[in-house]
Length: 234
Image (cartoon, rainbow, N blue to C red; front, top):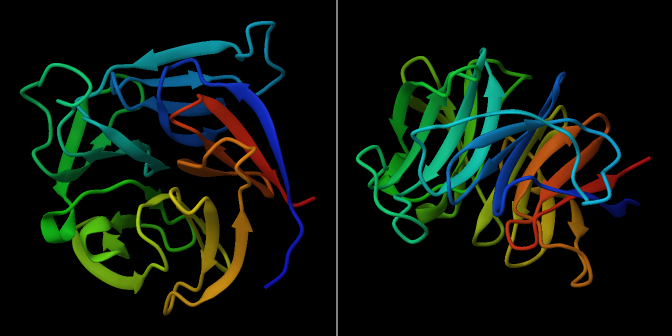
């Protein structure tokens, strides 16, 4: 499917290595891959330093944070194994891919779930169209897996077209998935993974990592440069 879009750098994240983001009515949550803290910031014009206003942040027990979702009153963080590559090991670090359910007020862990197949995770998304489910990138099998939250069982799985799947956004007519190394964001059919649309991010723009919805548009963050970027469809 051919579609028109624009790519616009908005501002830099307040953290060094932003690897996940989610919009909420109060602003934008951004997770740092190194410290595993999650900051809530305003969506607005950046200051002279290139960042927007910081509202608050929370410490979490996540590790090597890669992916975030908002749903059922919680934050959901993808812990892609331990954080030992970036910082000293913590007793709460995951030893494989996990999803942590986190209190957005305190950062306290409410539940922990293993990734199916015991592989890694780079992206997760709460399904607001079919509530009670999370979409999880199951990297070992190069698939996207729909998990039923109440018993953490696999509801559905679709194949992914490329390796290194990252941010995920569920929309009414499909699901968007970032493939970071290929610099593409593809929309897939939720039934069978058929490709419905494709966005190519040029080398001149920041590399896509985390992904979230922003009105009728998409936002992504680049863990390398720290930029938050809008993909506009208007």
